[in-house]
Amino acid sequence: MEEQTKDAMAAASAEASGQIHSLLNTEEVDTLKQLQLLILGRLQDSNAVLSHFNDYSEHSFTAVSSEFLRNTRLLKSMKTDLDYIFRKIRSMKTRISAQYPDAFNDISDVDINDERPDLEERT
Image (tube, rainbow, N blue to C red; front, side, top):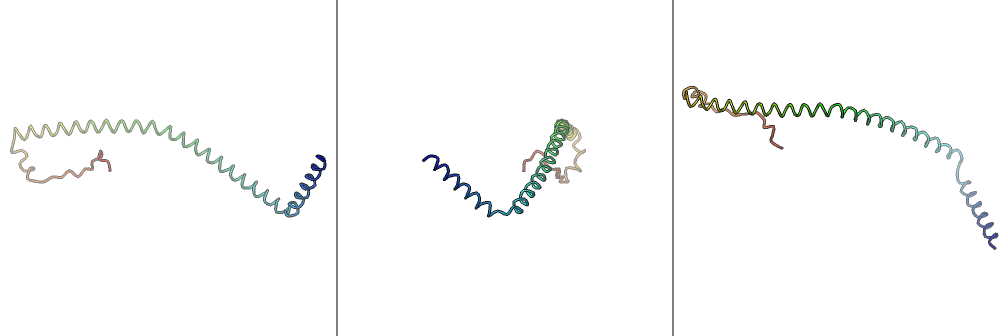
């Protein structure tokens, strides 16, 4: 009985695969295989280009990041120095105006607006 079941399953399987095979056109299957291989080749080329670009980007970032960090430190140092200089100028101006009140009379009448942008202001 078990052998008859196996034979019946094999016959049904062969019949089903034969019907499916008769539905498929071998030229269309070959065309699909060729298209899939073409797409695979293009995807592999794209993958290689993207991998190369990622390697280049990583190398460029490594080279530029240390320079960027150095320049950022330099700018912060320059800002600190300029703040110190402007504080000193203000204090000197205050002392001079206290010692020589007539020295800044002409300037005090004019309304001077500081139009420099505030670089520390977060927008």
